[in-house]
Length: 242
Image (cartoon, rainbow, N blue to C red; front, top):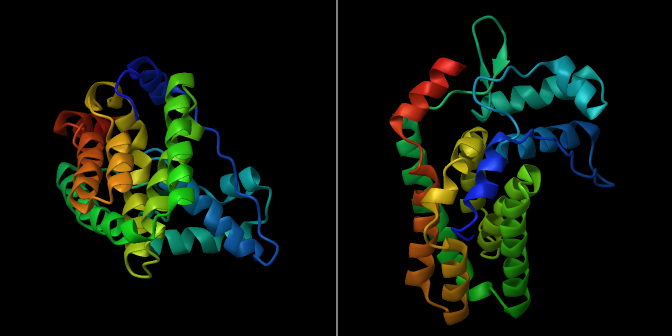
């Protein structure tokens, strides 16, 4: 991701988010598809902190009945992606400085490990896929296309990590993205300033050289640049606004 795309980043932060439900697999139940669609939407920042998530609203958005939505929300509350309040209202949890610090530390530890574990399995074909995804990230920033940016940035990271075929790390990483996803827009408003270095490019170069230390540092830097750009003042302002 290039640091000279500040203008596009600011457009992204203000752009309306349009949810694009994933295509339903042939052998996928309606309940699983609704859950996957909502999970993906949260993970890629489609819902903002403090946002109320209603069963009827989601059902209308996905053009489904209430029952699969109710079950999907129940599962997402259990995963701490959503919060059930005392009045039975389901909302997107708010962020706090301490929670952000914990999420950053956990993401750095798990994602850098997943990247290094995946390194031996990355062949030329997969490397080209990662390059293409990073180009789409840059183009989305340039165009101010928030939906594509969020989707392709996530795809870049998870494509890299999944190459290691870890049955433990990937679910843990996805659970962290679920908790951080709603705050991605706050990051987008800052990355034009924060991304002085192109961390994705650093990661790609490290993969080319088969350099695990350089890859670890690139992933750590990418996470720190994004998550560290949110100041305590911004988090407190977010809590007040919601």
